[in-house]
Structure formats: structure tokens, C-alpha cells
Length: 133
Image (cartoon, rainbow, N blue to C red):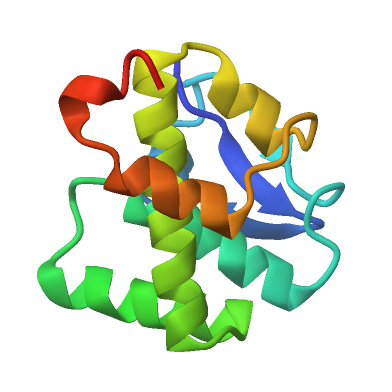
């Protein structure tokens, strides 16, 4: 049995091409499919999904990884400074989660707001003072 489902968008195979090739040679092997049509409405959405999911795989060459990061950057249509600010935000939220479990979910769900000023203060706080901050 194939453990990971083949990912489709409409009738287009998006992820699982190698598995699909093996399945064509061995039709007796059971498999499932999963559609991303609900979360991906446009071709650009699908390309962003592919970039996001491929970047998490270990089998990419450095060139493939660089290409996918560039493609994802283009698909998101953001400036280099926005990417830097987003990285700083991500690092701050991860740091906060380390000392206050559950806060990441609160921030990412929008229940708790984290201003740029607050994030800057948290990043500037010495590590030993963070548990009490």
C-alpha cells in the first residue's frame, strides 16, 4: 500500500509523480488521492503549494531549493524588506513560544496581536530575562 496519497488539483497530478509511475507498473498496489482544489483556486495557488511542500523535502539539490525559493518569492509578490520583517516576526514568535507554550497559536490565529515595537523589544531582551518577561 502507498502510504502518502497522490495530490491532485482537478484532474492534474500535483505531487506523487514517482509514486504514480510505480503504480502504473504495479496496478495491484492500493493508493489514495487527495485533492487541493478547495485550498488552491488558481494555477498560482497550486505553484505556491508545490513550492511550500517541496522545500520541506530532503531530496532537493541546492539548485532546486534555490529555484523553488525564488519561485515562492515571486508568487508571493513581496519586497525583500517584507521577507526580512517576516523572518524577524517568525523568529520572535518561535522565541515567545519557547518561554510561553501556546502563545504561537494565539498570535497566528489573530487572538493576540504582536506589534512591531513589541517584537523589537522581545528580540532585544537578554535571553536570561525572557522567562520573566
